[in-house]
Amino acid sequence: MSPCIRVLAALCLAGAAAGAAAQMVRVVTETTPNSFLQDGRVVGRGTELVELTLQRAGLRDYRIDLYPWARAVDLAQREPNVLIYPIARTADREERFRWVGEIQRIRYFFYALPDRALPPMKQLDEARGLTIGVVRDDVRHQFLQRKGFTRLVLSGQPLENLRKLLYRQVDLVAMTENEAQRLCEEARPDCAGLARLLPLDELQLSLFMAYSRATPEDLAQRTTTAFESLRADGSVARTMGPLAPGAASAGR
Image (tube, rainbow, N blue to C red; front, top):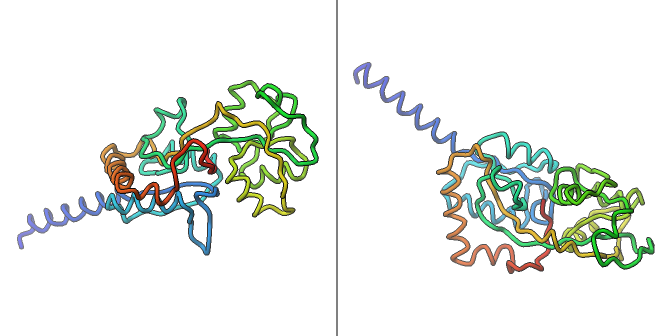
């Protein structure tokens, strides 16, 4: 083989390796009913759907990491080839991500301790005089800020947020039914009988998986096409359950 051909072959191999490396996907999430650590692996229905999607897209080189939500969002806004889930699709986030597919729809409620003796709430403004626990930078934090709520107590993780309610450091937290159930199973002391109060009907949202904006469009489209094929053959519904407004899961 001539020196020129050897150099050309080496350059081709290097280019192929660089292309493969560019397709490595970093998946980020936080601990939710859809994504949690079990036996050293991130599992959950949402995680299973993400892996099915990446595999159908032919993307075998990926890793899934759990982070505090603010850190996960920061990574998904700054770095290429980062896939985040489950993330609520809101107007202010629309142009900041490449949206892949709708995982689930969710509904939030305010929760309080059963002995707190709060009067029944009929509208959001009735909660203004109460302290409300929120996870930093998640959609509930942003929603309440937009509504002018100022008595917000920030936490880095959902379980930390719930414990502030259990230890009477806040009056209310906003959760889905499924999130409340799962976090109560993890919490010590147990929070059986947690009172569900006002539904946050303005905050009914769809949860998605989404790429960072810096991710190449062809990679995002390849993943979206794979997700849509999973939806078409029923895999999304089988993995996540019915996609209905009342479906309860945690979302950010």
